[in-house]
Image 1 (cartoon, rainbow, N blue to C red):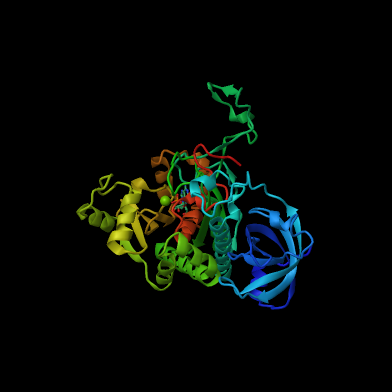
Image 2: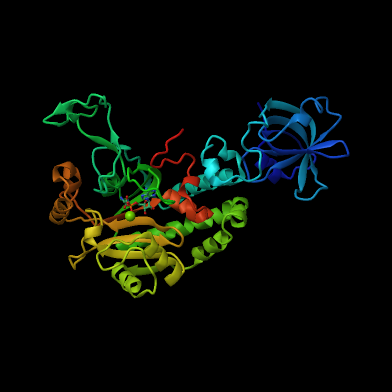
Length: 463
Ligand code: 4AD
Ligand code: MG
């Protein structure tokens, strides 16, 4: 089957060129002059193309006039300048073949607009809508830009494992991977006997590729990983998923300052790439989802981010005349209301918050000379809050061992991670970017479930 994508046809401007198009009908209406106007979309771009079918076509009455939203067709015709409003070009059809019907009585996408909640229940059809096809194209462009950014900088792409035996964040929010019969779990000493399990030991889905990325950074310098990560936290919010994608660079011979520089360069590169390469889709989001997205991204490409320490942040928050649900004091973890207050009300732009108290951060972060804070940095953005979490890593063997014990973790399970601090340890740093949160920020979509094709959240794993 030979066809030309609508994106290519519309950008080719080959007036009088002959094309074969295939796609799904969005709308169809008849004109009094004996024509049928069909809006055809194939997902290759935001625009549909208008087809003009003359009543002289042999299947005009039997088929063409019966076409409704969702039907798939093949159309052969000539591209001409359009006299009508709303499009520059249209296809003068010579032949239409119906590939698949979509019964209008039961095809769910009849109306022009549906709620996002409803569309989530039909994840098999929602990519046929303007919003979800635009999200898919922008998500694709951003994935490509991420690889391009790191490849241009000489970073190596490392495939870190999805099944793992260690908990990177030490928070115990992991999905177990097992082939044991859950109706009859073998026991040993009153507990599940993982000795009889597939791996002979407990295994889980990874929450982050960081620890394995560190292994490669400490051999090859600058690396990154970009893959799915899993968190079994019971968070039913607009910014949490149980399965999400994370981008994690890791750099040897790099301190926290270098890490923050990379994070800001990286974000600016992605924003600029999307503005340059996804114009139509961004115009769509700017018109229908959030009227400030384009301006926000344009500003960020040229503006500096704000850098403040956690201590300064707490100071600002405790003086704020704002009714927070969660009170703040030095040592407490920031809630999203605090993150958003700092970004939206105080600075009006993304901020990088650093040097958090060690008690509220992961065991692997480098302890500052004050002994109280760690070399952590979170990038917070308006409307969403944290999109990046990173740090300089603890590279001193004894300090790391103490931190692992303090965190209540078993040092035996981290023997290899500790050993990296025994043999040729170097200062190194990295961060993790939540890919879906970045897509939310770029598109303006307020719910994270709408920027991933198949969202997994507590109580929801339908197809
Ligand atoms: O801050 P986090 O937990 O950091 C790490 O996992 C580090 N190991 C990363 C590193 O240094 N290599 O997660 C990183 C980012 C967060 O800032 C957030 O954007 C995103 O991952 N994230 C989630 N996104 C969607 N749903 C969830 N449940 C998320 N949890 C974290
Ligand atoms: Mg974090």
